[in-house]
Image (tube, rainbow, N blue to C red; front, side, top):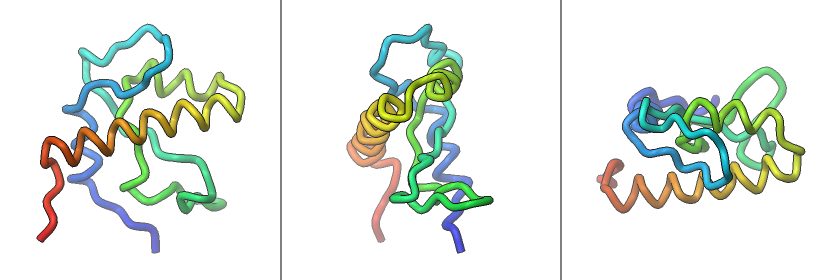
Amino acid sequence: MTYRNRKLLDQAYAMPCMAQFTHPCTGWQGCEPAHSDWQLFGRGIGHKTPDWAFAAVCHMAHQAFDRMSREDKRMEWLRAYVATQNHIWENELVKVA
């Protein structure tokens, strides 16, 4: 079963855009969770990766991923994912019980 957590995904909407490539950023309007599309992160036929495998990016950056080469998309998504994870943990948006 794929891990789902609406509260975790909702964190993305209040985060700054973590995309580090040049794009017409609309992060001031809010961001959205961009799930990984790698099998390494659990993607399979007919389902997305678990909800912990997302990068918080603005809508324009999310759309830009679809226009990138596979290699560029992976590198830029991974950079945004690491920045997202750093933001989540540094700002204590997730707590360990």
